[in-house]
Length: 117
Image 1 (cartoon, one colour):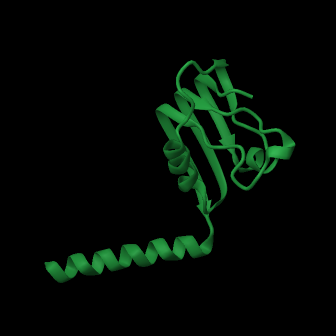
Image 2: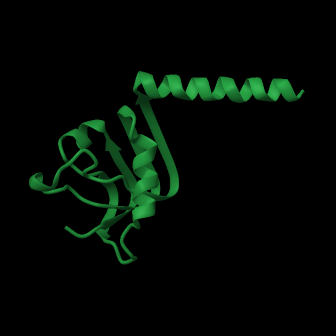
């Protein structure tokens, strides 16, 4: 199915992703008239939530997205994340290993800053 655009509020979460469903639009929705999402845009969006066990995504404005993926086309990264032009809000729960790595990186950067002071 071709990409669509949503003008209004677009909602997506981990439960829709697990069921192979695409985002839900509350507003005006229609076929996207601009170029499809680039692989770079998709990689950026997927990287944001790659380690998230649970996430809630909202875009207020305009969002380009792929609707529900056919069941035979589902994989770990299907359906893909929307591309938001407006206010994007993402709330996620990372897995413990990823969270630990981030804390370690932050502690290392803080120690480096203290060493320079």
